[in-house]
Length: 522
Image: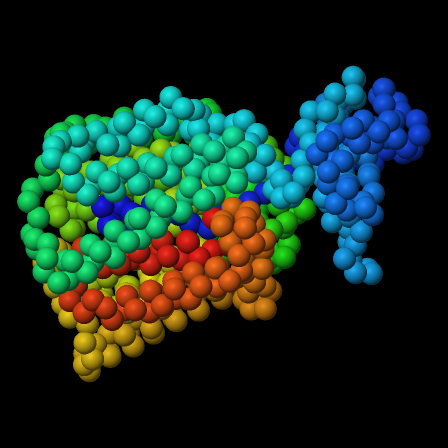
């Protein structure tokens, strides 16, 4: 479970800023007469929008708000309301948006609050994953996910599975636009898994759990699990090709690869329809380059085949890494089980069918764990994972001090010694060397200042309703969670002192979950 949780821990993704109804908007030539072929004028569209109770409430709270009407595709109007600027020279802030049909003046959508800026909070059907979000597919995969463990007696393992699948409740509320309920309901499963991983690490380090666990008692044979992996992989790839969407995350990878191949700067040069897609580390964009060479981007949202191919390759890489990790730790049966669980976990299908880069992060975290027996490999792996997305950098202290290998029962002790000092120094040197190599192309093109401003700087300052800290405006709470995550990442480097592969996997999972909980955008 520690291995699986460390692989599927949530990762950071940028969210799109989409105008109401999707598509581009145009300003009409005049406000008092309808555009050619349209029924309503801009003034009439504004008058219709003003009848919305949501708009009246927002305008009542912002007396200086002014409306603007725009033409949309499919003969729709968008009416946006803008507040008075906070200071002279500052742009007005959009406080309400209404979408209405020109033919009969029917209001189709009306949004206020954070849903003005965050279209993904509106609950548009099929916006994420399409078929992956189907209740039948989601529930079917959930059943397959728990199938290998349907044996008595009930154990903590079953509660772990319930916590992982319990995140589905939060996701279901999110897809229906009920963010106010979705965000707080994501906290208990993550908090439980964090506590569970820490407890597992401490109990095992203290000798309170068996060093060599009993054979895996599963309801499915290894062969059945292997057949399940093959069938699920085929089904997942088929859904990706026929019934998936590319959100801004995958689109960003394609744009970044295109920029790199053209020899242009990577950061601060993205087009307006994905202006903040340059928020990831450079390794993420490097990973799209082979697919961009094979399936070049044409500068438009043309289905983005390279994003599909990249997401599929990331998914297969994560499956392969989990199989290898399980096989190294406990033999082929665990390896096949971990591969099966990845394929059956509905959230990994969601990642694949939104064509994001999250499976790349999971695969690279697995590579970090596989690299643990060697400080040079470990330092290089942390640089690779951390410069794709930055959360895995928190694993650096843990990797630098781990004294043993990955095998259960192969215990070592973290304690001051010349040998331990050399290990830490080698890990740091390998990390620095790999990071310098990986960063050199973007540093030459963009410079360190722009790189930091567009990535970590943007993530630190962005306001988002998709975490408790942003939804409830709790900067103090986020600061406390951030300090706790930093403390855990540093503390995991030295405590518990006695550790083997199981302990280090549990600690890695705990650190990543703590980092996720501290972020302002989940």
